[in-house]
Amino acid sequence: VKVARVHSALGACLGRMPASAPAGLKLVLAALEVQEAGLQEGHLKRQGRVDQSTGEKPSRGSIPDHSRSDVGDEDASGPEDCESDCSFSSQTSLDEDLELELELELELRREDARGGVETGKAGSNERKRNCEIWDSERDWERCRNSGKGSDKKSSGQWWEFGRKEETLSFALTLARAAELYILVDQAKDASALHEKALDLRREVLGPRHPLVADSLFALGSTLQTLRQLPQSKDCHHSAFMIRRAVCGERSAPAAESLYSLACILTSLGEHRMAQANFQTALELQAEINGPDSLEVSTSLEGLAWLQTSTNHYPEAILLYRRCILILKMIRARQQSPARVRQLEVRLANNCSNFAALLKELGES
Figure 1 (cartoon, rainbow, N blue to C red):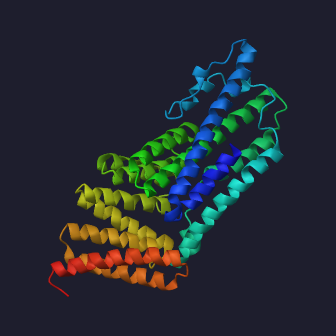
Figure 2 (figure 1 turned 90 degrees about the vertical axis):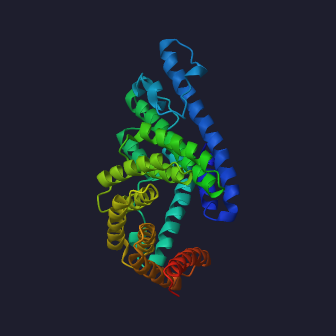
Figure 3 (figure 1 turned 120 degrees about the horizontal axis):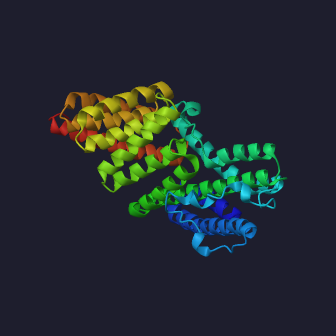
């Protein structure tokens, strides 16, 4: 399971490069199988310890189904029923287990921060979201401070935390596999995995955690790709409500959800609400990342699309011009060839849309 968790993080790193996305997907899917088997084995071991105290034999039929949201129902007996010889009693083992995975996660975050260089405001561009790995590290520290399993109660706490930590790691691998499925144009498979990850995170973390919002956001984006727009709208709205309550009404995650919700509303023809969301997202992105950031250009692009759809062509022209100007400035500052190529693709798409709009109006 330790190796599988590292492979999961490595597969996500490979997914950063489109050419290696299929290889990354294979690595993550293999990690999924190992982690799911590990969860089932851990449940059997735990059930065996409980049954020893009652004289009953564990049954394989009691293995939880991780595709459902009632995963945690098998723990009705309570963690205090576990004996003291749990498998999470070694601080050294913990450090070795998480060290490489934490390193890979940190590299992913550094990559996100480096992407902020193109906005001219790298520090504020990094999204400050909770991650299972970092939550687990803090929880492990609290667990260490509360005792090392010297009695049944602390042993039960270790067992219960270990189960939750492994479940969250499995949910993270599910989310990574789903994102890689998107990259290889298998959105239907991605949707199923995002739903499983969402159920697991809700079961462990509760319904109003930032990671639950992240799963809702990812599921909504996948459903949008599948053109299931009403369901996508519901997911994005739920994600926004959680992010607004937990992260703050004027936070980057809330702005991201507003923009995605506005795109769905535009496709559904709810133009008035879409425009309000686009405008709010644009104001927040300018406030958080700066007026010439990549996020602002994205909001401008969406708002220009809406204005074109509603035949407000003069407003759309101004928005496209500003968007193209920002993208050119960001491209001029960018050093990474891969980032330059990505920016050039976006720039070409916006120039093409702008040219089509001018042609429709009879301008050159």
